[in-house]
Image (tube, rainbow, N blue to C red):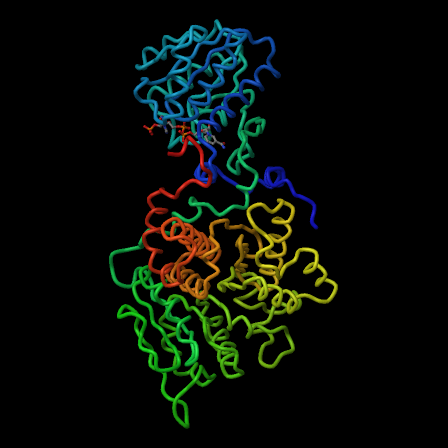
Length: 560
Ligand SMILES: NC(=O)c1ccc[n+]([C@@H]2O[C@H](COP(=O)([O-])OP(=O)(O)OC[C@H]3O[C@@H](n4cnc5c(N)ncnc54)[C@H](OP(=O)(O)O)[C@@H]3O)[C@@H](O)[C@H]2O)c1
């Protein structure tokens, strides 16, 4: 078992996140049940702690606060500091301009307290008349990560007022000095920033303090990761993508139909090439004619079909390959040829189900270089050149994942299989210890790196990696073990690829939405529903997520 990495420490040192990620973490934290009010309380408390520890002689403190959440953190800090210090809060702006419920709440608390004096400075003259020389320390809570452009109006005047007194009075900033990186900026002695140092922060002293973010947020797929990809891209035909599905066989026509039905609402056109006589699953799906094989009829795809399909492969924005194909030598040879064409075209694609069996280790006929894992660093890996971003999404379940692992790694590495139980689809669940989740995440990352693809390992927790990062999805329901839900997922991921969503994000979005749809159906009809019902319910669930209305993960009196 891998040691339990502490994600926050790991991230703090790498600084992989920027200011914009804060909003993403906030939204995902809220979805997990962590209230913004809790975060604000922790942030303000952390600022007060730093002042009490680093500036024990500061008995009279002025807090200059703005109407955003940066100001809200300042209101909380003021309440904590007022227990044993004199604290005056100057709101730069009018109380009715305070923006969020959390900041309003914390403002109301201090405004009602006899221990904090609160003054609103609604005009520039009020700010200019401010006398800060009476204070031992100034807390700058004017502007934080929500700053847009150089400080204007009242804020500018307040920053200048602080800087006039700065040489004589220590200044502590909430999150970052107000105005940074524009002019004027508060000249702070130190900023107390939260949870991790942000990529953009440079040129000022700062202390990082935790504010209670759940550590799993570093790897979790939440609504904030998915929502940006749910807008339709445009009102014109072609702007939402064309998807080509190469799937099914005379024996298994249903899998292809499910993939096409799931994708159809999300793209402009779905083209379905499927051997056999089955009629199109919906008038919205455009059938691609496949001529009879010599001798009549056809059971499955054949390598010769690649030439016939060439123009469709070239025209498609993305391709789904695999559901219900069967594993005949002809079908697998067809898959290998298609993969070579898709690579040459750099066309994003999903390799699912039976098509995964065409991915063979180097040495099997026709598989080297084009579809094998990069056996050595010099070898061209599958899914594009070694330096290019992956264009291929592999969607194995536990058993298929283990097979890909065995194919990709030499015997010594295969022992990881045993240690991490790579093949067991249902052994990892929401109650699994973090160390086990992290071990499987790292294994998924290594497999993705090896195959130069995005790997989505389907299971009770879906693991997703592009070879650099790994993420896990915890939406899902036991009802999703019904046959065909994997085909729905492959079709949906293909649809997002066709809309131009990058492969890692497309896989995360597909896994999140299918899992959430399973949960939604379970609430409505119980655990017995079909993959067709999942495909049918996807648009409604997608719309809820797009509106920011995904139900929170915990039951709590705070979530009605
Ligand atoms: N994990 C974390 O680190 C974390 C998490 C959550 C919250 N926080 C706290 O929340 C802060 C961000 O809060 P926020 O998004 O509400 O933004 P903010 O930094 O508090 O700033 C927003 C306010 O500043 C005003 N403003 C923006 N640009 C301006 C300019 N150039 N001149 C004058 N006024 C300007 C806005 O007015 P208009 O609306 O009129 O533009 C708005 O009232 C962080 O800095 C931190 O303190 C931190």
